[in-house]
Image (tube, rainbow, N blue to C red):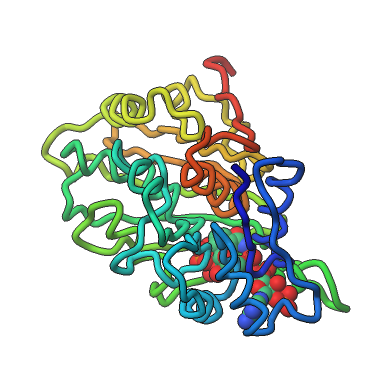
Length: 323
Ligand SMILES: NC(=O)C1=CN([C@@H]2O[C@H](COP(=O)(O)OP(=O)(O)OC[C@H]3O[C@@H](n4cnc5c(N)ncnc54)[C@H](OP(=O)(O)O)[C@@H]3O)[C@@H](O)[C@H]2O)C=CC1
Ligand SMILES: CC(=O)N[C@@H](CCC(=O)OP(=O)(O)O)C(=O)O
């Protein structure tokens, strides 16, 4: 069967990447609008209602409008925006979230693609909280760096065009700590309190690292790096896209660079630290436009279509155990 797919916001950063990942697929028929109609309400409404799956690659307000324009019971939605991440009636599109998540995605009519930063955070934190290794009231933090494509067409233009493109090598932001990704991080990691989330934009286009520092000494359990690593490794055993690198000193450090997994749908977790001083740092490396956005959207679309979730996606192998 051929699925009719409409990408609302097709010429934006996320939309273009989804198109590229779906190019050449014979199981998909694209519904498309000409340039002069792509923001016209009526024309979008027609496409949204004709589509089997509508993928929204829009700012939040336009995504909310698109959902309201759907009048039938058949069009299924994948929303890449942050409008519905913790909304009632919406499925969270992180396939590796739990053993039951793929079944929920497969049955979903309204699916929210995760935020880029939250995917890595949730991938690392949730299994540890679920296993009781990290208490749910833990005062967690997240430091992260993203390429400037994370800010969409507008930010790409600020870094690449005009008379005075931004030259700043590393630009911390979100310093009032109210970033829109924090509610989904808290909810899906299973934490009682929002993490302190401190993101930054780097002077490169694409790719990201989430880093979670952990003061293990503050826990009475005597938790060691090997415990964290064993829990995460067991959790992602057999997964195609989320993988855990060999423990700490055995991991290749050149794999912990933000652009390492660009073009793939992979997310690799690394456990580092120092048991003698009771501190660890968990790192997730992935492509903000891959597993962080477009790759995840295609993975979710495949699951919703009932086909192999890896169709059209690239998975990267793990670093080897020697330097
Ligand atoms: N970039 C990233 O790394 C990630 C982005 N996201 C989310 O995905 C969504 C899309 O982001 P991104 O692709 O980066 O953003 P872009 O700004 O690159 O693209 C958004 C597109 O939506 C179009 N658009 C805006 N308003 C309307 C409207 N009313 N009707 C139809 N089209 C409209 C824009 O048109 P025009 O071309 O005219 O501006 C643009 O082409 C956002 O919600 C973003 O937060 C999620 C995860 C990661
Ligand atoms: C570098 C940069 O600006 N990044 C964006 C996040 C992009 C993203 O993930 O958008 P969603 O919230 O729709 O998921 C930001 O911090 O707002």
